[in-house]
Length: 139
Image (cartoon, rainbow, N blue to C red):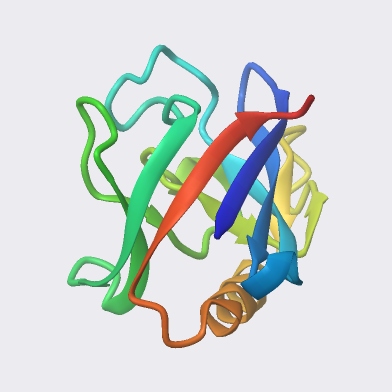
C-alpha cells in the first residue's frame, strides 16, 4: 500500500511524505514529496485532490521509464510519480526526494536526491504491478 501524507500546502508548492507499507503493515520505505500547489485540481497547474486512487506501473514514453501512474483522478490523466527536484518540473505529478532544501536559492522549497528516492521507492514496490495510493492531509 502507498500513502501520500501532505504536510504543508504553500502558495508555491505542496509538501508531503510518501510511505510504502508491505505485508502485515511492515514499513518498507519513506521519503519526502514535492507537488504543485493546490489550485482546485486545474490540469497541469495543481496537485490532485486528496482521495484513494488505483496506481499502475506503466511505461512512460515521454520520460522513457517505467513509472507508477495514478488512475481515476477526476478530470486528470498522466499523473506519475517521477524524479524531479523543482516544482517547475512538475505538471501535476508527484516528485519523491530524500530531503527538502532550496537547491537553486530561489526561495522555493525543492527536493534533493529525487532519482535516488525514486529508485528506492521502485525497489520497495518490488514486483507489484498494481496497487492503491491514499492521499491525505496530515492529521
